[in-house]
Length: 391
Image 1 (cartoon, rainbow, N blue to C red):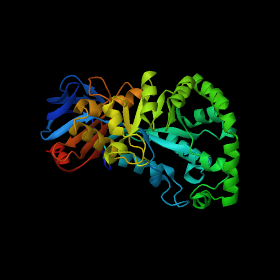
Image 2 (cartoon, rainbow, N blue to C red; image 1 turned 135 degrees about the vertical axis):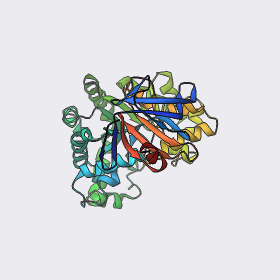
Image 3 (tube, helix red, strand yellow; image 1 turned 90 degrees about the vertical axis):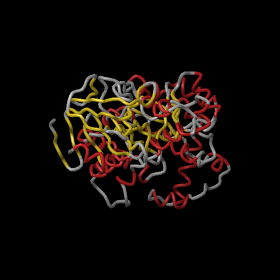
Image 4 (cartoon, rainbow, N blue to C red; image 1 turned 30 degrees about the vertical axis):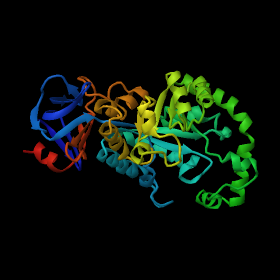
């Protein structure tokens, strides 16, 4: 066995994990899992390590997470080196069993850490730093759809940023704006963005006034993005009609549908339904939307995402299995195989021979993360498991 240590990173060229309970298609089985050269092997290949008392599972693939913001901008204007923030983000992902993480970055009228200028820095940092990290970090653009002035240059910018995943949002408070009333918290929001509150309100009114132009502009933009094989999704669909319109544009991922009606519409057209893992952990939506647990029970979920809380995918999958909503294999698939399939990453998400050695190891009793491996490299290692590796 060859090993290279760099801080917390430990790469093992070949290893046999024996006496563990390994997740196979039929469920957890006492088995051996071997990997070498970054891939899962069919036969034993290296030094055996006794993992009795541990669960060996496919690494978590997180389709949408925005908890990284505190690492990249812990205090406005204070931190300039985003690469260091991404290293910290990778460590947090690994500590929570996430081996592939999509960082969902806004381009929004809200400004600040959700404004176009900040987003450009984030996307450039991910493009330049992600290849140096073992955890597979990718970018998603969350685009506020009323920013029509950005549409013309967007496909070229996505190419320059190496971003191939776009989700469309609409967070404008249309009801209030239609009445000419200021939305709640407008002053604080404006000041965060560095804008005069009156100017901020006028901008919102102007964006709202252009809403009739948005559908046709979206049709054209989505057509251009589809030509470049950009993965597209919608966010917070409320009705079947909304989901059908996005499907027609080629946006085949339905992120966090707010109602069963919208989720059912996605299922009817074969679109991918992504729900929030924190919704499962909380036992319901913090905004009063459809319960993720109920949608999973109805078969209206293909993947769970961390949204704003990286520990939640692991916890949600375990809670679904414990409560009998689905079996263990089905529950864990919602955070591994399901999201990998949605992203077109067919080289991960299961523990089949030939797949990337993206693995999370849990203590069987506490079910906390003991280790994470991405492409055969240890990205997180703690406690008893560490001592077993070196004895």
